[in-house]
Length: 276
Image 1 (cartoon, rainbow, N blue to C red):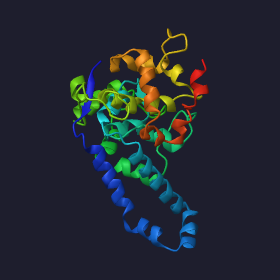
Image 2 (cartoon, rainbow, N blue to C red; image 1 turned 90 degrees about the vertical axis):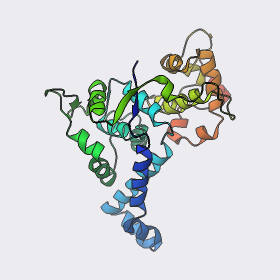
Image 3 (tube, helix red, strand yellow; image 1 turned 30 degrees about the horizontal axis):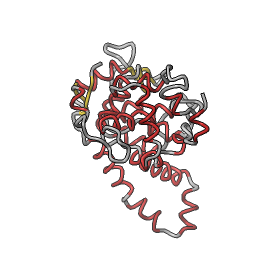
Image 4 (cartoon, rainbow, N blue to C red; image 1 turned 90 degrees about the horizontal axis):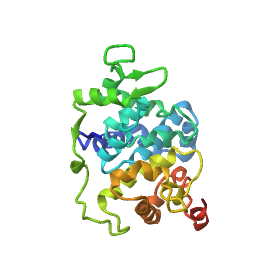
C-alpha cells in the first residue's frame, strides 16, 4: 500500500497558532475579562454560543493533535471515502477525529464541524477554499459528492498531490528507529505512534464498549480481534503482542487524557477484559 506525507509537516502547528491568535483577540479578551454576569448573558445569545463553539473546537483540535500527523494522514487515506470536514483536516495536518469529538455522538453518520466561526476559518484558508472548488462527481476527475458528503480518497489523493499538499513517501520516512522504546510502556516508539494514531479513531467508530481481548486476541487465543486484524501487519507483530501493548497503553497518562467518549469505549477494569 502506498504511503503519503504532508509537504508541509508543520502545517497543523501553524493552523493551531492561527486559531489561538483569534482566541487572543479583542472579542475573546473582553469576554474573559468582563464581569461574570455580563459574560453569562452574552454567552446565551447566538453570538455568544458561537464563541463557545469556537473555543471548544480549538481546545479539541489542540488536545487531539497528533505529533506525527503523517501517521494520522495515512490512517484516514486508507478509507474508501471521508467527509468534507475530515478531508480538510487531513490535508491541514490535523486529526480528523476532531469532527467526531465535536459532535460527541458516535451514532451520527454525517459528522460536520460545529460552529460558524470555526467552519468559516477552515473554509477561508487555502486548503479549505481549494477543496471546496475541487471537481464534483459527474465532472471530469470528479471525486466529491455533495449530496452524500463524501470525498472519495483515491481522487482526493491525486488532487492533493497535484496541489502539492501531500506527496508519496516510504514507510521508513514515517517512523523513528525501530530499536527505540517508550520508557513508560516498553513499546517500540514507531509502534506507539501507530497505536496513538489509530486506536482513538477505531474506538470512536464503535457503537458499544469493547475489551482489550475483543480488540486484540479473544479468550481462545486463536481468534484475532478486529482492531488487531486491521493493524498488525503495519505494526509487524501478532495479536498476542497487540494485546500486551494495549494493556500497557491504557495505564498511561496519554490514555487518561483521552476524551471521555473514547475511554468509555474501552473500560479498563479486569471484569471487562475477562469477558468474551
